[in-house]
Image 1 (tube, rainbow, N blue to C red):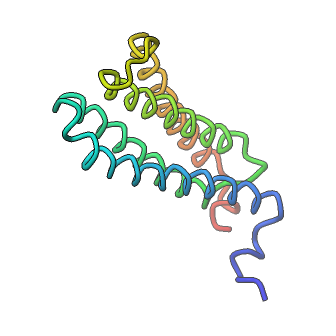
Image 2 (image 1 turned 90 degrees about the vertical axis):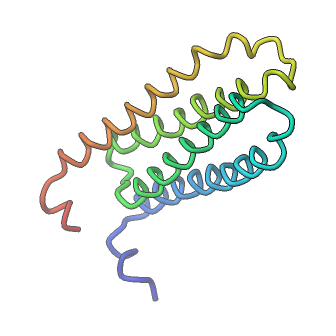
Length: 149
């Protein structure tokens, strides 16, 4: 017997919700690992400024992992706005947090391209903003009957 909340979802909605939860789970796992690595592994290798940059990446990865989990409860395959929110939250985590991880470890990685990665961080931040904006518009455009379901 299926739980009653699954009866309300058609198969496409369930697939989209599952995809978002899987993505959020992956980002959540990596945030915990990267947070622990920053606290225990990087602390003695990079300076306080770079450790702060690393921590900011982990922090924003966690914020938007929780945003994705929340989004999974609203997601329907039919909602282009919610799908865009999912896309931009995901891109934001990869670009914003990912660029901060690279910037924080540039001294020990010795990767030449890292010095050019700074402009990627604000693009990731813009993706976060767009994710929240699409979520806002999607929810404010929902009909009363859909919001009650």
